[in-house]
Every structure is written in C-alpha cells, then in structure tokens.
Image (cartoon, rainbow, N blue to C red; front, side, top):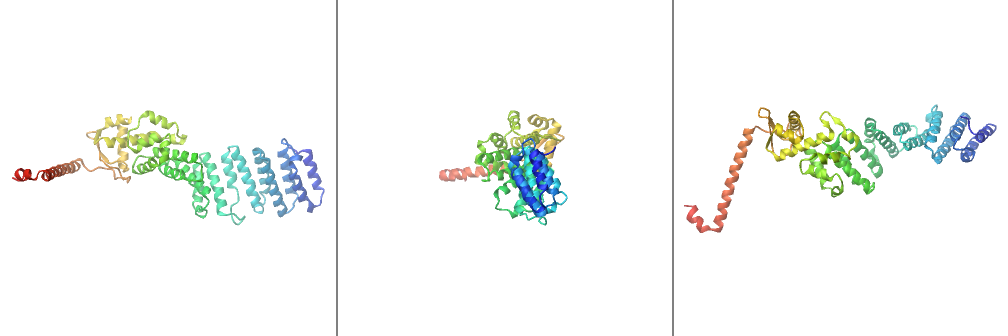
Length: 420
C-alpha cells in the first residue's frame, strides 16, 4: 500500500536535499507523523519512511539515531497491530547488518514482544524476546537486564504451557540470578516461574514448597500472596502420599493464613489423616487447573492422590484389612487396591506387608521413610512376639506401680499381708 500524499511529498522533498541534511529531515517527518498521517495510512507511511532512510545510506551513526526516534514514535502511537507490522518490517531492514544496530534492535524487539503480549500471542512474544541481542560483544548489557529478558521469555512460554522451553531458560537463569540478589521483583518472578514449571510437570511436592515460599514475599499484594498460598495447598494435596508430603502439609496447616482459604477443609483432613469423601473431593476438583486434572496410568492426578491418602488413613485405623474391604473403602477393585498398596509399600510410603494367600494386608504403625524398599514390615510371628513381650512388660510395670502406691498409702497393711 502506498504512503499518504503528505508523507510521499515529504519524502520526495528529502530526496532532493543534499546528503548531510537528510537525516535531520527524516527526524522531522517522524516528529510530525501524527499531522502528516492518519490511522488508515499509518502503517504504509511508517513503512515508507523506514525504507527511505535505510535506502539513503546515511551512515551507521545517523541511522542509529533515526531508529531510536522511530522506536519512540511507535511507542507513542500505542497500537499493537501497527507496532507488530511496522516493527517487523524495520527489523527486516536491519537484518543485513544486525551487529551495527544492537541497541536499536533490542528496543524494537521489546516493542514487538509487548504488542504480541497485548494481543495474547505469548508464543510470538517469546520468539521476539529471544531475538534480542544479549551478547556483550555486541552491546553492553548487565546481568540484571539479561535476567529480565529471560524471565519474561519464561513467563510467555508458561502462558502457552510450553514447559520444556520455559525450563530451558530457567536453567540458564540459575547461572546468573545470584548476581542480582537485591532485585526483589526479579527474584520473585524467577521463584514463581520455577514453581509453575514444577506444577506444570506434575512435580507437585516441589511446586507446593516453592509456591509457599513465594506466598511470603512482600513484593506482591496480600491478595496475590493468598492466591499463591492457595495454589501451594492444591499442589500439596495432589502430591504422592508419604512422609515428604506429610511434612509439607504440616507447614501449610500451621500457616495461620491457610484457615481462611477455601482449600483449608481438604488440607485439614489430609493433615489429620482423615478419610476423604467423594463430595468434598469433587468440590475441590472444581478449583483445579486443567493440567492438575490430567489422566495418568492410575487415573486422574487427584483420584490417585485421594486413593493413596485414604489408604494411609486406613492404615491408621486398622491393624489389618482384607482386600475386598479395603477395595470398598477406596472405591477400587480388589486387585487394584492390592496393586496400589504394594506400590506404596515398595516405594517406602507405607509400612506393611501383604498376605496374598489369606488376602489380607497387615499395617505397621508409624510412617514410612520414603526410601524405596523400606516399607516392608517384618514377618507376623516376630511382630506378635514383640507385641506380647511388650504387653507382659507393661502389665508387670502397672502391677508394680499399684503395689508401690498401696505401700506408700498403707505401709502397715503391706507389711502384714503382702510380704508374708
């Protein structure tokens, strides 16, 4: 599309001037663009101006100055679609000599990325930001500036659930975040990005820890801190049952802010090892993100977490239980209940043993260590013998205690009767 008549005339006038004065005239046209152009012709006008001063061979210094002015003009217009179209055209003009205009390319890429973000095109925004020159051999850039760009890229990738690309940049950030310890906002975004990646990958236990840490940050509003705490509770509930999750649940339960959240009821029941009912589980599921409802080989993430929790709860209530009874309690088939129990015992998240002949599961009191292979209980005979010995010892100690109490209260009676 051709430029407007006013812009075309202004550019023709510049072409008639001697080379030393052309740069100033291009600057003047950019400053007057709102008077020379209209919303309908703005894209073609700005495109024509950029093409003209690049074709004029003004020299690197003058072209850099014009690009700075051009970026400011685009920024002032505040039109996302125009910024993308014109910005990408100008970036194409710099492609033949990118090392000559590193600062200007960086400014234009940030403008284009911001425009894509305004349009909710986060993948395109991440691509634009990734093309910003950050090599110190091209331009002077501080570690903080590098970190800001990378954090922004991570956040854009996470908006479209591209966890792999986001994690690649987080791994790069780990090498430089120690150089910007005083930038609280930057550190916050980094920590939150780490939590979101763990959450997206289904590593809910680590995600819960990181979300909980972020919820204490003074760099965000109180409402956002409570939201982050809420997400931490959801992740802790979804984490595999076992000693590590129990510790995270304990920290969240003791957080005074948690009592005011909608998720507190589920948190309390899990912390206290109470059995969960279907109605409250369904209500909790309504507040979960789509990836938190993903289906695995053992059902949805939430259903697996609830089954494992209820199995742990059953181990607190029963010394032993039959396959069928446990299956009815967990809402599973008998074989599936046995498989779930065996897996948790094998992974050290539950202490017990399975008698497949009698179809009975024996539970040991106490909590598993979380170490693979450590959940198997010793044989029944050894356990019952130790229990018998302990009971005999306890009775003997109680009898001795009663005798001592009688002796203290009625010494004459004891001397006359009990020592005969």
